[in-house]
Length: 281
Image (cartoon, rainbow, N blue to C red):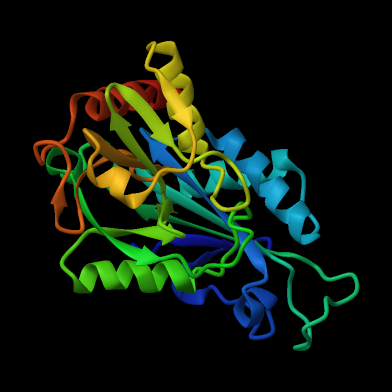
């Protein structure tokens, strides 16, 4: 059965879904998006995702297309119509359609699109064996805290990883790790959890925030600061966090095994804690 997608007020079979060729998301990547994970037919941490959506839109001066309550109602309808039990719900808002011009159109009508994807989240095999990553220069723009749809640079980095036989790439700027192609990066050394501090250099991850809170509740010491790629390669453990990966161990960076080359105990504990909480949401 074809998926049902939402496009600007209409629920449509995916083959019938269309947006204007003049949509500024298509022409200029002038839009933002959010991805919420779905477990047992329920959205995980969705209110935080919608709050970040509001912030991203405000930073780009794009009008919020409707109330938060109306968006949530559409999201729930999408889960129902697609009978989604486990996977993701993608939501995108662009400035809307207008004749092509670099300047913003007056009084544009924002475009809102949603679709679902079935995805194995809870029993992801990668969590058992761990991910391998390569390092790639970070060539993205300097407002990475805004979750825009201009994803060409991370897409190229991800393809470089695939071509190298790795699972993902960590992005490097001035010798320091910023983040992964679609996730926040973490290391553990001497029992201390380390992840880059919040700034415009990285996305303010929703899962990142949840994991820091869980670590604090568990009494795990953590530090929010930049760390170098050399420091990462000497870490005891490493992992990434994202809405769809949860907490995913990294067992190799470039040609360097991390720890003993297997998912670490702290990483596995944090993944278990996150999943337990997500199931209760």
